[in-house]
Length: 146
Length: 146
DNA sequence: ATTAAATATTTCGATATCGAAAGAATTGGA
DNA sequence: TCCAATTCTTTCGATATCGAAATATTTAAT
Image (cartoon, rainbow over all chains, first blue to last red; front, side, top):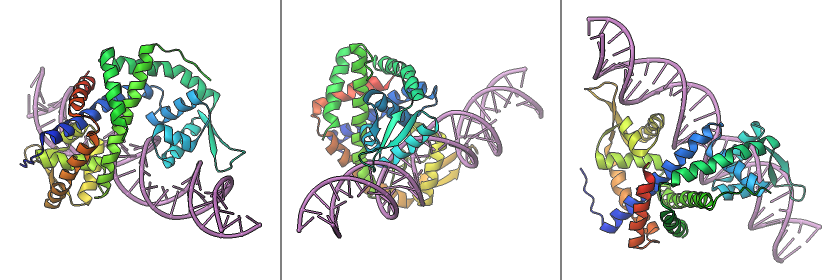
């Protein structure tokens, strides 16, 4: 039975950290459910969504946008390619670069799924009032920097 | 170029979701750094920490506490066992149950690492004032339910 | 007591995820 | 022009992570 003595401030930080992770987890798992319906993982969806809203992208750009390593993007794009939801094209102007495109099947899939995605998130976050959401957004924005 | 029309409220929920994930990611990666120092992953640390503070636990209890599947806990405990940081013991009273204990090496490791862990978190969250932290905790607590 | 349902763990097969190293192409100096 | 540093992607070897199925054991209900 250890009783490490931490300051009040440290204890508060620890608790806050746990709450942050827990809240993220909960929201994520609501989303997980609806994605599973279409046999998509989070990362697969994140890439499809980026392409859907921003058009064809390099893999490095995708990596930056979805906050995952380049190596990981390679893997996930592989799996999306196997499902014929995206295709790769080597850039003509810079032959190191691989541009990833949505196929028409990928585009249709996103068109179908995205509205539901938004709904799920909105419903899940509706636990908070409008004002609370704005407050939370402020705080998270600040915390997300640094 | 798609321009899906979402309500103001939906747009706000989407943005908030992104901020939540991003903040979690950032804090997590600070922690990742310090754990890497001792060749521990997050899940490995989470299990060690639980045992350190709460004493020997069933794997299912660990699963509930660290918010991961039973299958995953089996894997992570395997890896901790290989490092001789924990040991398994079949319960005498209920032979389905496997109790996981810290070894003395595991205990020493935690005693060394945990204070640093707290410091890292405290420093990272110090971006927010005391009052902001309390506010954030309230909001996340509410969001984490439901 | 016997069987059915519930619980704890492991195994299996996918996919995710990382860091490091390797390979290919481009760019910026000297 | 040529080489060194940089950039983009892939490969490799670990570990994480899940859901579903399989095992073993316990509990509950008849």
